[in-house]
Length: 242
Image 1 (cartoon, one colour):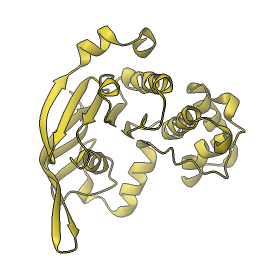
Image 2 (image 1 turned 180 degrees about the vertical axis):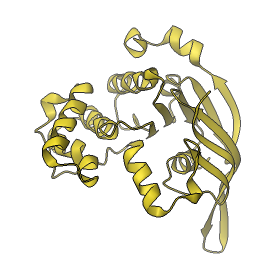
Image 3 (image 1 turned 60 degrees about the horizontal axis):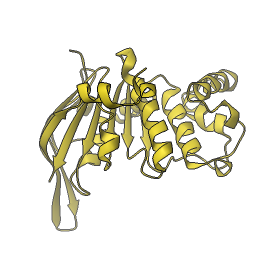
Image 4 (image 1 turned 90 degrees about the vertical axis):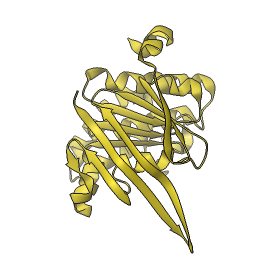
């Protein structure tokens, strides 16, 4: 099985004044290509820190963080930045759309930052919007959209570079139950090609069950894991698995 991301005996220690906070304690976790992994745990358990370590947003204090066979600690800052921009898509709870940009411009932003020509960037952004059912919001500003529409725009932005991994931090945390299901169905379909992996941090057990595997985090350690693949295929709505 090809591994997309891997943490090997990783720790992460933060200095808060004179006190050291051990957010992650000796975690080893591998994410396969084409796998959807959910991570659950109480606030402060270290689950978001794990996501940041896998996505090259942070570096381990000890241990190894690996992306597609490359040790992240061996990369220079520019290399990690390029990795995040081209091979990893991030989806957050608060959307992080720029209020002065239209929908299509928000989606095109990663391409423009990568020096893609504006015409081609807008063309690719339009395709990404179409793929998430948001073509009708291409010319609208974020304050003209609902929460679910903004999250779909954020997903299109994460997908426009055709990344190899999608990392989601509470992607349905600000959405109602109906909209949450729509977003989760969309995320569920992403790994089906077998090339894209999804890792999702959530507090919501129902959301977590859209994954193939559920990792429970407690006090910076993996407490247990559940294999959800058979349950997900049996119980999820047809739109989530077709």
